[in-house]
Length: 538
Image 1: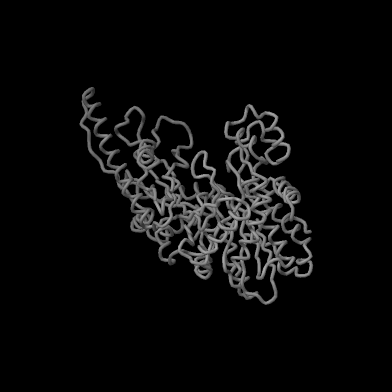
Image 2: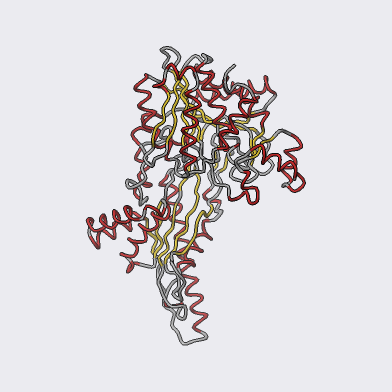
């Protein structure tokens, strides 16, 4: 019968996984990897083949888990990937203490059904749902994949199945990035040929009220550009003697926020426009000096656009913002001059890339001095986190080059997710057709194929769509690249595995109403996944 082969046993496994409060970067994230490893150790196959199950430490003290079930001398192998970290629970408000107790939280929500959002009420009246942080994103998918690994251990597949489950997907994907060389090593050690990588991230809605169930053949890409605004300090009593960085950042945000020019369309699928993720000035305390340095960061998604194409678009948009800053300043100064004897002086806002700023700083102070300063920042400000550490490194160079200001500097922050797609892969496309047909005939479920999973996923790191050289604009303009952030480009070039995503049905990822539809996820999908794996192993 197995440990995890019924709806009831899958529910039990899911609740145990959720009860580990595995918020990214916390100790329970470490503990959950050990729990998963312990549960898999209990399978007879791994008692007989303990070397094929492993906890792999990451460079920061966390761990990811691999479990390989081999079927004789077969080389064909499907990788099942998942992540076990979750986002925090501050959004749960008064229900925060129940966020990791799915049954108790669900009971409380049912008790207060009339106070719930309308879409939650409609769902609870129509289906069987379970609430809790991580039930949808993505511990249900992990539970299903553990069930599939158990099936493999009982001889269900004519080929090999490799489970890989990782931490840190919700922040920097460190777990997956550091797992890439391990995938190469396992392939060499056991003579594996990876036929496909199957993720089980949940179905995401494309718009409010979307009821479609999707199967994905790729995952969307992400860049996190920052714009460092270096103005001119002055006293608030003499505002026209300086330039406020908060105003500069506001104009950049005005130009980029929800700018549809950055939307990419592939076969009717559309990337969301850029949106701001952080904006602040860098004054550390209150004073009557205007903020003359600030930063603003944006989420930019893409499918087939190159990094260079997106960089060029960003620079074009920021030059428009810079010109608006110059014109607005003169306009306001001219109005002020009518009230007070004052002759406005025009100025120019430079727009630079981080690479150009770095070259200018080296020109002024020498390469050895710049390296010394950046090494010092990297070594002594680790507690800042990647985004703030990147900003500090840009700040240091901009201050050295302040005579060139005012200026806006484009730089990139971790994390970076390369877009990946198997939409042109005939093997994956044929598999998709067969899965769609199987689900319709056997479960009366209509699956809608989609090229790109829209929620970002670790599928981005199972191969490079393009050559290593196409990543160069990112490396050149990311202060932390080669310092505390790096991609295993050689290993990624060796993998290049076809990808797809078939996952459970849920709603409201990263919201306090996150929920999983149980019947589809643990009955229908539990039947469709073995069929999918067999097709991917043929």
